[in-house]
Length: 308
Image (tube, rainbow, N blue to C red; front, top):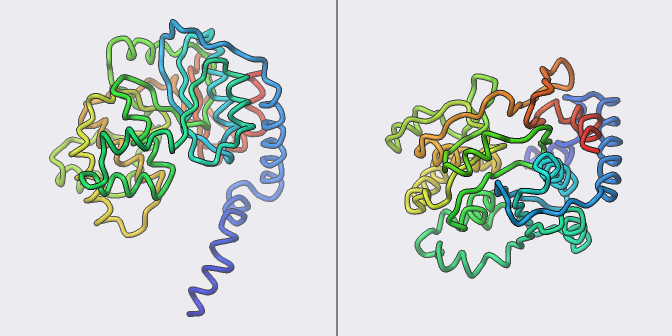
């Protein structure tokens, strides 16, 4: 009883504080918070970009009140390097306020904003709860799984993007993949693959060869290639085998299984993943930079300013 009390009233509520102090230190955390405030303020004053009808690429994001500023900067940087020739879909996690929706519409003229409720009829038609109980359970249990479900009911090729990224150059490989229907994923630089179960166990269970080092920051493939019956089987198995659900990791695992079945290829290293606050390898040729782990401080204090 004492252990549960400590976890509920001390350990869990203070986890974000302890995480930031451990990874960034007090001064680093303060810089991170200040940088994020500046980023939010700057996002309110971005010069509008009109998205052209003759788009060369279609991309989708999931966002809400916690990450709206990251999403708008990533989408804005992409629209900027593509001179507006990109179709952008913003899926709300249900928390996106009317004010933020208006901001997206004003900064990215022509953007599509999709609410969770707007998807319900389509969901019930294509993925009814009786036939896909595990998949629908995950979708309702956490907004993260709307990246897997809502984004992919469109039956066309699109690029799925995380928000904590910035584009610096024209994404030639993604545009060519959009034209040719090629499947791609962002590749981690580190050796480990971040899935909820060992790769070997997944491979033996589903009879497939898992691609290595998949990072779901960028996933590019045609939604028509998804076998939803198979995805339901995967979801049920993982729910049975994984005692504690970590939504981002589980979503990445399921998508990794999907793109492995599609024999997707890794994007080159100009689609750069950064892990640290210092000593990152940067190139003027970087198409995009994805800021994770300790690189969040670098991202929130310095990097977003390069988009302005």
